[in-house]
Image 1 (cartoon, one colour):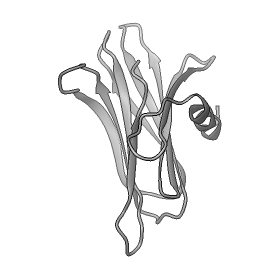
Image 2 (image 1 turned 135 degrees about the vertical axis):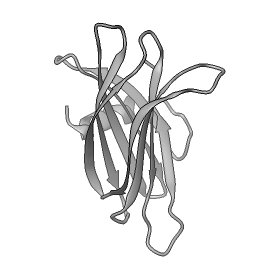
Image 3 (image 1 turned 90 degrees about the vertical axis):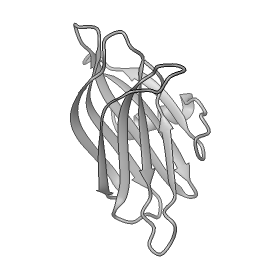
Image 4 (image 1 turned 30 degrees about the vertical axis):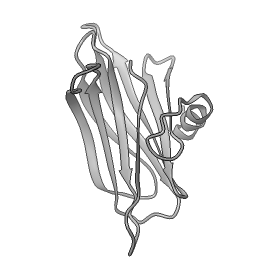
Length: 149
């Protein structure tokens, strides 16, 4: 499924989180056995969307294999993108399981192949964040969290 299709579905089915601008999060599955978590956020006229691909392994945990993102609007060529997997511990600090960061994401689509094992029988989620590169101005940012799985 194309990222734009996933993001379009996330915008329609999305859950409003209110982190910044309009945000949404959704989950979906494919015939290949991969599942997807996605969402989007915006700040001013800039938009950021992302998808995390994962599968459920025989040991009872989720394995994240790829992160995709899309940046649009009037932005520079050195946008900061951070994507992190966390375990949901309810009323305690959520431990970080792994992630990806780049300080040079360009406008358009990007992706990173990863291998992040989440603990068996734990609820996990992915946090996506971006700081948009703006010349001679304060760099705006937005972030969103996906649904817990």
